[in-house]
Length: 441
Image (cartoon, rainbow, N blue to C red; front, side, top):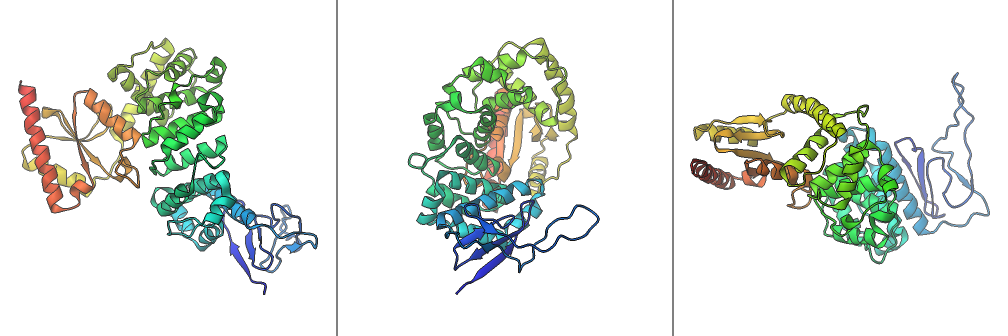
């Protein structure tokens, strides 16, 4: 019995996906299988006045040549994962609500099933793990992150990570960095980050890593707040460092600042190279400006003072000019938790400032008289699957503390019930009393 299923796909590579139970074959994109030859039947091109484009109907499925051999299951699973990755790449420009709608659609679920991953179920079949190998597992994690974003495919990513073995499976540079990116993109924490760092070290570390992977890897570890200490002991040749664009060097320096690594040789080499360049014509985006301001805070406040060239002094001035007005004028919607805290402070008779930017950061609620910064730390400040603060949020708290502020963090759990919110307010009153006493002394 020959049972075929046709699924309409979306994205630039979309055409039709045909599964044939009798022939054990999968066709993607144009309909041609990746490993065997096939003969495509298409309808005559439409006459549109523009270039003629061949079209394909639901009935015009690909026809196998008589000499074709059945495609092994592993190839079917790998092809499903490769197509998921293509769809994830195509989804990058789609706003998150639309992307989530696509991620929940039947075609994606079918592709996940073919890859060996049951949507919503935290397991990946052993046969699929063997068939996919290191490259396939990395592609699957990359696709899940690209399609689902922070809000979707958490169980599925846990299932794939459970199957990942960095010591027994073969991972290329591309695969290892793709895994790091996928985890950081959706802020997904895993204890296997240590194994990932060790696998990178075993492949030669940063010394042998291609430059185009270096910045992505440092950014990924910085976002997750994981310090791969043994990796950061590596140094790069002058030509490697000189081959990085100025904005990439800034990204690298910012990532190392997040990880509190301003004294490592890697940071010093990046900083020296950046200071040797003429940066007058560098395009200053608001992201670059914010990173430069935070780098300056790290160098000033954390004992990592390094020589600053005239070029860098000018860049810092330009960054301040761009970033501070943005910081001051940023529109925000006050959450219920934020509003409740403001009312509580008002009832205590405390004067406060919302979205105070005097410290160089936007502090949710500042109480200047006692130098307390109340931070309403929602889910975006933590890994999506663990009670672990992300790197940039930890750096903000660190910088505020270095600048004389006592940071009082209020999380969603602190406001989850009446009793927990009463406890949080009680702790804030104690901190206010302590700060008053300290400042008076």
